[in-house]
Amino acid sequence: MTDEDNSLEAATAALAAAQEALHVARRNLSAAIVAVYRQGEPVARIAERTGKNVIEIRNLLAATGAAHRG
Image (cartoon, one colour):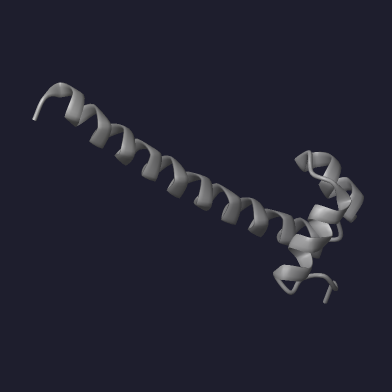
């Protein structure tokens, strides 16, 4: 194999690692959003703090079963 061939594999591996890191980061953000919501943080404030909109936060909370504080 030439260096060119190796660079393709290296780029592919880097992309896979980046996608996994993004997945983990999204999962961590979701967990943090649920946690602060359950602690009483208003949805609008969570949206403001995360740069997301209220609908995105409400959808995330609904998808995780945390839409209603318990």
